[in-house]
Length: 398
Image (tube, rainbow, N blue to C red; front, side, top):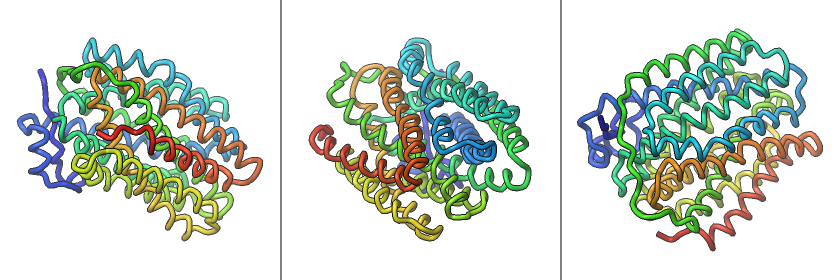
């Protein structure tokens, strides 16, 4: 049974373009199925966001250095790189629903396992598994959205999905910081595991949908520049999620709850703007939106090196979030139009961008240990600037 997707979800999912406009993009006759998917995505992303805030703080309490905290990002990448393309190809051939359900339940199990980790080594091992389970999950969720959205509205469709995901990831850290401060790490991980299992239960109600390859063969000369933009986007998120919470608490003297508020601010600003920025990409083309986002990431990461208190840090995270928010829906929409099996394309994209989850926090953590946390922000800003110059020449214009 094929279901088509509508993003006219009330309350938290109703920001951006009007419901009527989105319904014209994605048919509304199976609204309940889409609503279930968005609820499942929201709950899972909230559990992931809450756990992601607790993870580096707990690792720090176990005596982890910035380098070891960065290794949490490296571990996430290893199995993701290996299985991204096979997972995408398999879903193109066999359908996406079973992979989505498996991804939901497996990720919930891994988030729960963090509660029994008694050392940094065990945290790294479980993080390794999380990279695999999330690869299976998100490649197929994104592929399903591409399968069921109109080609001229995919920027908005991907933006609306990113918004539901981002709102969950944004709410998670503020709750995660509060839970960590009051309940401790183990109870926090167990509670987030329960939320993740609840998301899996909701996902069980989602029917199967047809996989639909886009027309023609894949133009890899256009794919790889888009993957570079995605790599910088993912690296930005990785640095914010891993380095900033520890920097805020150990260097600036903020509490875990306040650090959670910072991450929530960054994620929610990005999430709210995903759909409007996706709409701009649909109307103006993805190239100018991506380039503007890349330039903004470079500029505000470089300015972040000067952040010496919580107010300045907060003020700079807002435009950094806006810049990052411009990239995701534009890149995903452009990739979905390149031709070939969509799961395969998402697999290649995930393989390349997964490097950002590992390299940015891994190298950034080592630089932070050697030269101070600002060195990781400087690295990110310089890499974004160099990538912007490359994309100016290589990014497809249509």
